[in-house]
Image (cartoon, rainbow, N blue to C red; front, side, top):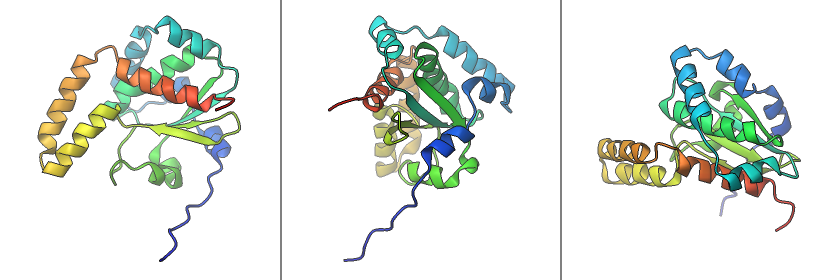
Length: 189
C-alpha cells in the first residue's frame, strides 16, 4: 500500500505574524462598500452574557488565522463575527491573510476540493492547529454538499440564502466559532 503524501510543516506563528489585524485589513480593503458593510455588521452584533464571559476570561491566548478577501459575500457576512468576538476577548488574537499570500496554507483548507473563503484556522497558545471553520456554518455546508451530490447547486444556494435570512443575528456562526475558541483555549481534556 502506498504511503499517503506528507504535507510540509507550516510555521503557524510566522503565518500569523505575516497577517493583518482586522483594523488594518478593513483599512486596506479594495471594496470599500463591503468594508463598510462589515463594520456595520460588527457593530450590530450583541454577545450573549455567557459568550462575553468566556471570551473575557480566556486564560490562554487563542490565535486565529483568517483567510479572507473583502470581495466575497461569505467573508462580508462572517469575518465581522470573528472580529466582534476578538473585540470582547483580549486573549483572542486574529490575523487576516489572503489566499495568494500563503498558498501552502490555503491548499490545506479546500472545501470539497474547491477554493472557498473565509477559512478561519484556530491555533492554541503555542500555535498548534486545533480546528478550522468555513466558509459557512455546518448546516449550510451540508446543503451545498447535497446540492453538488444531486447536481442541483442552484437550489442548494437558494436554500442556503434562506438559511442565512433565518439567522439574521448570525447566531449559528457565532456558536460554531465560540466552540472552536473554547477548544483552542483548552488547558486540559
